[in-house]
Image 1 (tube, rainbow, N blue to C red):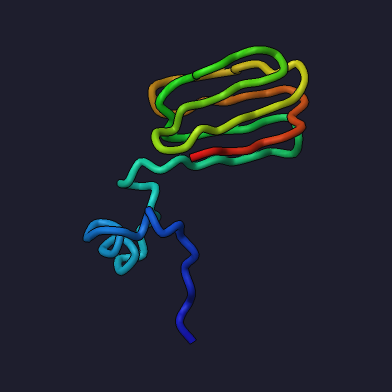
Image 2 (image 1 turned 180 degrees about the horizontal axis):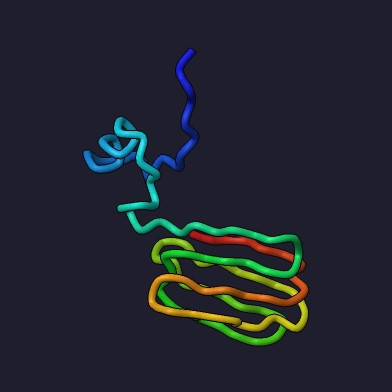
Length: 99
């Protein structure tokens, strides 16, 4: 039985998205979609961001193009950031997003 891929509809649109799926290449490799890794409740790594919109110890909002990522917690700190990736540490209580 073939493997099912669950990607957001916006990511599958167009020739490039379909070609990546056929070649079994991750969508975020070329389409610059956000990719997040969460390590417990203390660290978050995010790739393909476009900058910080709001920053405090209780709330960090990150621009990811069509999506805004919202990280809420206590003692939040931007540990590292470059043009493509960022790392947030602290007591992470909630992660959400809006289009």
